[in-house]
Image 1 (cartoon, rainbow, N blue to C red):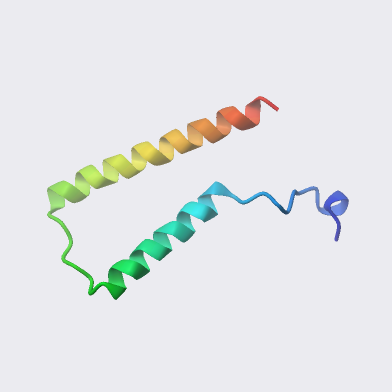
Image 2: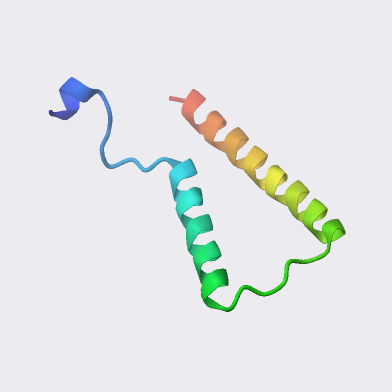
Length: 69
């Protein structure tokens, strides 16, 4: 299949897959380090808020970039 038949640019990496790969590397490194204890529930809540904020900003920025084409 060529680019004309698929309609996709094979050089482009999906940002979601890159983030998922980085998360997998972090989890594997955490496991190899002996799996330190998880932080308290209050810290995990704020961590979830921070992750949601970062993901939201990335979605907004990537959407703004693609709408300019």
